[in-house]
Image (cartoon, rainbow, N blue to C red):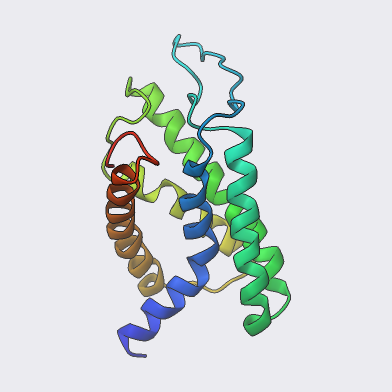
Length: 166
């Protein structure tokens, strides 16, 4: 199969997660998922950037993409996109948890973790949903997500949606 086919498939498979991850930052103020609680190390569990409202927006937008994909790929994709969006956001929260444990403040740069935490969550969702992924599709989305994350965050910063360009 030509490499472009793997790239297209990976974008299709991961589109709900990409949309979910990109939509959460539109919620500026919300109720923190960690209720402003600290972990045993004295640092916040997740931080103010992870909110219930952001999670709801992300999962809603990601699932909406799945409704559109279902028109072409079958109704099962509504379920897949819901689970994928949810686990992508949980992956993002795991990334925030790790950043707090490393002593990194909200908005601090963590190359690799910032760009790929949600992809790992989405990959788990796809595997649990019995979507057959191969290494080429996974590596394609890793590269795509890494580049897209850097570019879209820079644009969001310039539009004053994000406070930092990463």
